[in-house]
Image (cartoon, rainbow, N blue to C red; front, side, top):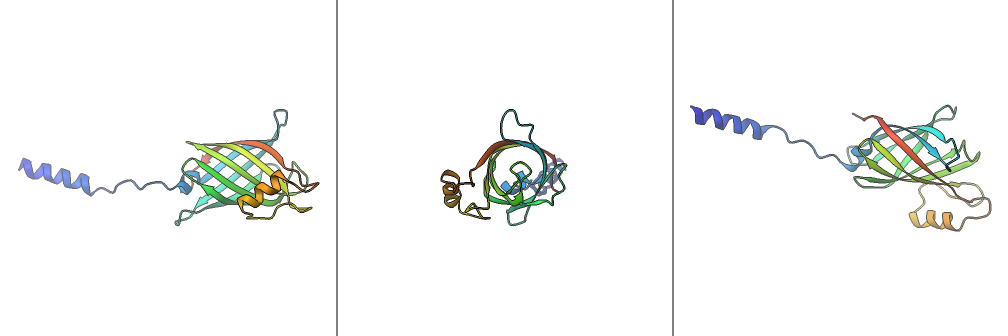
Length: 164
């Protein structure tokens, strides 16, 4: 009898569903609140980013600037692994640059913290367009046309809620 009880317990334990592995997209999904700054003396711009993982493992979302009456801006993932993401935002009217820009950011994830660097490039004057290849973006960043110089900065954010 004791053998049957032990066997039943072992089978029950084995039959339990194993935890599902988390995809890279799921690790970045959620509601993020943060601040971006251009330099140490800059007070920065607050933002909220909503990121959603698809069943296919893709990640997309929107970014809205806090206290600015502009519509949310599309966020597209360029590259991603379990702890790093490169994403593109825009085009949008930058409250910092006072012109239309596209921003590429490289972020690093640890738990519920996401931080990194960004480069903002104007769309006008031979600037950038959405979904440029990494090589095209780097060329526009390192050899900008006059009036299309990059604006660089850093960002920090905290996940406020996970996406279900």
